[in-house]
Image (cartoon, rainbow, N blue to C red; front, side, top):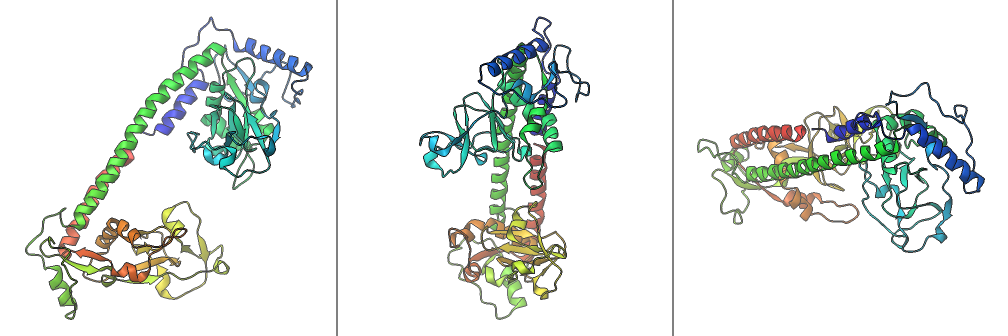
Length: 461
């Protein structure tokens, strides 16, 4: 179940007047809009707010012919600027913020959910420039990278970066209802259409104020908010269960992998050529490791150093001047950990030992230790990553699974705090358990069958 899409479907029904029934006894939204107009005129007269600049589409009696979608007859279409004080907040200097005041930054808000990840005071973070003041109950709307959907109702007063616009509504229009409208796919589409900037798209104050809002009667707003919260609470329970199941699946994968590399996943076959016999047949001078610490080795298994199971070639030390816009990609550690990370490229030709093909086994030994099977086509290998070429007595896929299972041990032998790394000597001196070649094949087949089933369960959540 895609709970993110389910949330958006509920919001879509809500802002179209299809989530709760209309009540003919409700005061129409048109009357509410007239009260808002009168309230704003009074505040302008009292000098508490400035008179808003009318756009070409604005009029004293708002009416919209080309509306985004139809709404119930008791509703009206308006704009965010007509029903709120969006853009009218005053900037404050950092000096006016006390040490204990809450200072909110964009990174404090979780993507999509806009849940507050951390609450820091002025003394807990270094801030410069100006900030916006907001009050409890104000809507906080991120104008920067609106696709991140960082919109929420402030749970308490504080200050925020100027990339976050705080505002409230007039005549008790529900801030919670407006919050849901701004989080809907409809309004997100609007921000993408009129936002500007490529890398960090943003919404201007003018475009935000011109954003059209479907406004229900005040009583219906409250019913809508209540129904949305009821549905979202149920979805929270589902997501919590999904997260628990995902954690269980991850733990199951880890446990199965541990059983596999200790000879407890598939039965031993006495007809298999033992690992020792195979190693001596390939290399008569092979000397087994001391197995004193592994008294309970499965039949036919032995221990061997990581350095003795494969050839390890470190990637080339590419420099910024080597980078080009065209040519083969250069594999960096971030490309292995993040599929969306951009590639540096080069059209130059280098030594063949740095060339990577589909199916090659890689091991990142710095920054973020990990093992990978490359399937991105021909590419050049950057430094801090080994190309791993296993010897004939060990299956490539088996070695991949062994390295995954041993990642904690690799980290134990690593050094550094800013950039963790493990030296080649330390890496190669670590021991692993080696089963007979035929058993390796059975282990890989069983692991992949189980992993496929667990992945299907994970994808179905």
